Image 1 (cartoon, helix red, strand yellow):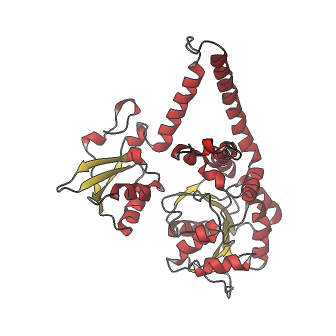
Image 2 (cartoon, one colour):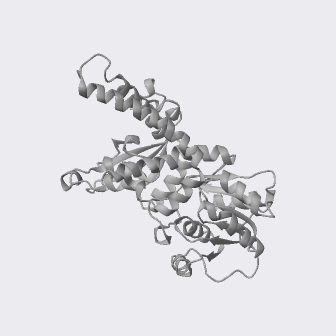
Image 3 (spheres, rainbow, N blue to C red):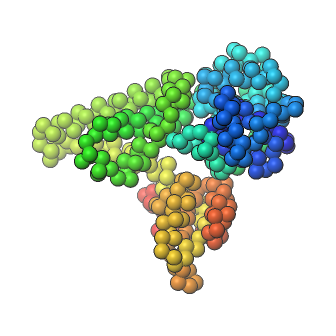
Length: 379
């Protein structure tokens, strides 16, 4: 399925980024927004044109908050804006039910959610490469036509994302763990700093900034998201509250008694161990993730600060310092070996680095990159 024309309804961060990604592949993109000035900003960035399409476009992307998707979809269907429609809402079950209730025509719609974003909002924060190598969930149902699904898949491919087909309920329970609850936890921690005295704020380091970064998201948007996925998020919070009660009880006992008593800190150590195991699963340091790694070799050069610039360049792709190793090259310049678990993500990262001017090439796996015992990363 080839997409030649598209419409973006809602020109915030995600909508404008989709427009930028499609436009750079030659798709004629039409931008619509209730705030005409926002659409004009997106157009000035190169995401498309604010001129209405002369007829139905191939695909319309509804980029509005979850609770508005069904109404906006119906409105655009009545206008015959597009042959097919999808959305980018981060909650899928409530959206699917609202669409089923409100939309007379469901064959031309498929739910979608690109797993990418930022704590910042608005078209000025958008970029064409936002979705490269990232999962993009699609939630077709029995009513979704093959043409509609294929048009959505074509758009995902043009955006450089990796399509993942899921049931709406499975999606919502998954994002409750990986996105929605973490946002609440970041907000809880960040709120502790609201009235913190200067002597506390002056000690803030990168660790706290990492923990609280996503708390900078727009409260109105996140209220809408959490309202739409309330049940799944509440279930995760209930599990967390039990862990918190255990931690508080253990620390209170230690504070009031003998801190060196046998087993006093066992619940704390046990939680920290579980946390490290979860960290390893996410960051790719578990044994299975290292089984067949892809290594990109980057020539860092001798210029001061070059390695730091490389690390900043790759952070957004989930390749952190724990996946970087330095070794000598043929000359005095250092080489950085970047370990990437997923082949698709490795190729996306290679293209990004090459476009940014880094000399980069694939390196075949060596014996040192074979699975390591005890879940250790390769040496």
